Length: 246
Image (tube, rainbow, N blue to C red):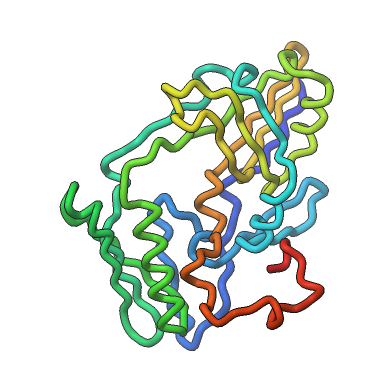
């Protein structure tokens, strides 16, 4: 027998968005920012063959837990690389929403690199939401950043039994970290992200897991102090509110 191969394709994800008044509106996904960034979500096939759904809210909750940790030493050397590309810079975002257009300029990036513009079409219906999203898209892409590109190939004969079990149980949207990355490859030394797809291969002579993952910054939209009303007091906060539901 040639062995078992099991693939959960990262490209099988489908963006899901609320239907707007104009059913023809869409979001352009030709940038490094995923549909999760654009406040949509993804539908995917779970490990048991069912249909799963996740958006930034779910991933925000997952990030509060403990990630599956993979030490860089068990990842095949040529399966992951970090690149910072000038072509990835976007410092002027023109976002079309139902009521018009929101424009955001990342002025510090423009001063250094000149204008690099990208247009997006959204299904948003609120001007403030459109302004916030345009700002976030620009800030995420304003400067070249070293993105750790996968997939990460882990040869299971090099791992502990515990890590092997964890890797074989991974599903799309699971939270992972890759630690002890040389700072010459990734300055932070640690990668945090979410599983977008898996390729598991078991043959007569080897067992491998390839993990396709996206950086967490493209999925999590953290609340900033500037977004919190100045008049908000503890007395106006639900007494039963929990951090993961905030």
